[in-house]
Length: 134
Image (cartoon, rainbow, N blue to C red; front, side):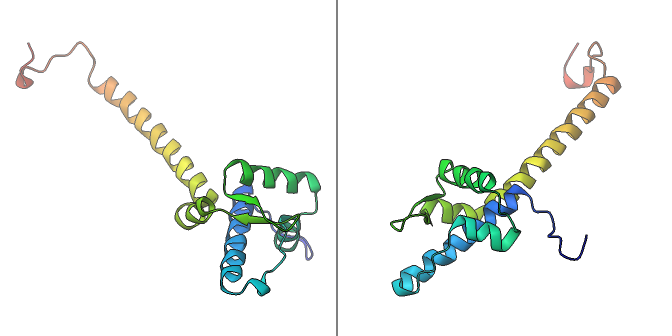
């Protein structure tokens, strides 16, 4: 990696980071409304990941809105995390969900591979009298 080059982040990492920061903002706002930090999604992506592409900002915002994890705030241009979003980021998050899906796919692949070997080891036309089959 070059000196001024930012590391690569996955979409899931970006989505999780936005939700985490919006959760902190929500907590701060509940304690002292005057301390509300006007954190836009564009600002979060720019300062944390170096993202300045408006299309990517809109795409990420759309994902979070469609999933029900954020909603437009009363202040124009800002978004608030929903209760569903808070629960999601605390329990699972996008990154862990992606890892779980990858792990499930690998388990399924290995299970199918194992079943194919078992099918070769025990052909279908073999009977097992000790199990009560004739």
